[in-house]
Length: 284
Image (cartoon, rainbow, N blue to C red):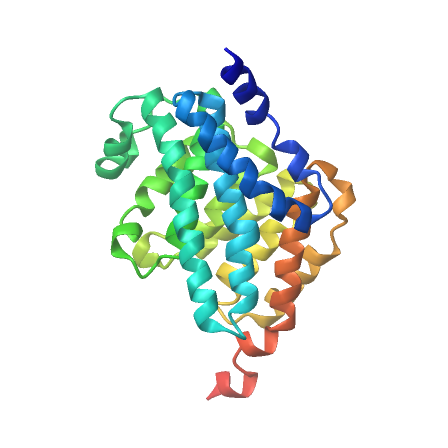
């Protein structure tokens, strides 16, 4: 009973990290919290709230403090950046494992069905399952995004799409457009993998609308996943400048994610000359 009570409390404590204005403090605190979650799960392995918190915690930590650092380092130390991205991939998959455990607890056999018949695997899910669908898709999709050279991961894109699309059908405005943000990345994949830049832009518009323009992440995601591959420098710069201009205090409940997204936006702006072919070369 005592362990369950602690698990209940910890699984609801994530908002205190999201509101923080000191990324370094959170960077140093989160690993201890995650190991505490994992230790508690050894005693209460089926605690739904703790499984979801552990999944989301590993996913957010991997993005905010491992993958983002790798992206910042890539231009100066490529080998170190590759090693950090590999670590991020492992952390994403570690988080996914906890979400998949909870998903299987909700419906036995669903994990296997997601990989063989994703279109029909989640018909049973209800609105109460949206956070689980979201974090399963976020952890899984993030691992795929930095592992596009791994066929065994890329083969799971339909499963991630199924998770996100089912969640969208159940609660389109979840977490102020977070599901649309996932869909920007998924639709930015090549057409051969089922992507569509037109659909990515529609998801971007809706994500901005649902967040009242106070979340820089959609701007950064569209810039990095659509504008840069298309070599649309003007749009790339405009999107990132819009991201940087957002006031983190306008949405204090998401202050930390805002600061981290803006850090990435500033880095991309600083590298714009490296990321785009000069106009003269484009004309050749």
